[in-house]
Length: 195
View 1 (tube, one colour):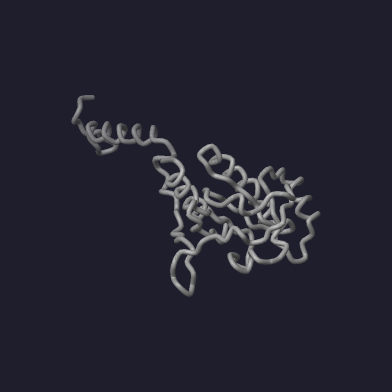
View 2 (cartoon, helix red, strand yellow):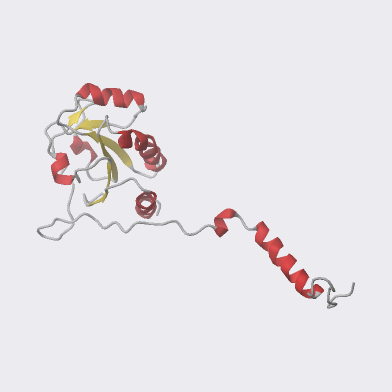
């Protein structure tokens, strides 16, 4: 058949058919990532003091009990980018997200990020946290909020909570470990660490 002829049964020209085939070929070579929607990113502001409306700063003098290393102090982690995982060793959500958060900490460690975990105080025993460390192969420093000072000041009443503390002590609080929150966390880490 000649180009431009009408196909009797389909009622379309060869030129139109060739265009459709070309478009289908181009579309089939596109990767899934090119077709996928943009990832959702949460809008997480720096934490602010409710009385002054100024950015809060992490208080590194809060007394925490070293579990993985009894001699280590929370103050050793000031003045640097720090990711904190606040958890309970008995919480199924905390257990599920610990490997993911620890992998994120390891991924950005070479760029200057330090990571720690802080377990709840209250009725949680040190041995519960030690068992959590063993079960989930936790290699970052782990503390316990044994005196109950960290949770009431920075917590939400729910767990787990992730905090990204900047060098100046200001911080972001991720109240849930959702994809949108983790996308914001990664974007912020890329901005502050991978200049």
